[in-house]
Amino acid sequence: MKTVFVSGCYDILHAGHIQFFQEARALGDRLVVCFASSEVLWRHKTRKPSLPDAHKRAILESLQMVDQVVVGEGEKMGLDFAELFREIRPDILVVTEDSRYREEKKQLCAEVGADFVILPKTPPAIDPVSSSQIVRMIDRK
Picture (spheres, rainbow, N blue to C red):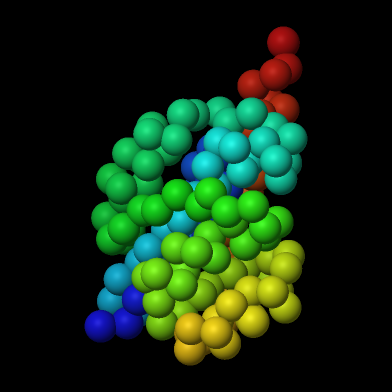
């Protein structure tokens, strides 16, 4: 059984996240999604979460392509999931081509014997929007 691991803030889920999860899941038999905790989101993006962690977990767990949800709480920028990654020992870490901290993530993969896969940004099924754009739309009056 091949386990695929993805991580991100996933503060506000949007269609781009769903498409990414589907593409990542297609690479294996199980998909583990790690989202950054509220504290990590604040430390790394100086932004309060849009949803409490328990709500975010419930939403992610409800997605049919997601097999497990974990919460990244580590201190290291870009690698808040490292401890969980070492525990789970997935076969593949999947990122998008705009992922930061590539070298650190490759090193983590080498440490546990996982493949590091960069998914190209495929044309979106619908017009793309980011979580930050959604927050700005909500803030408009």
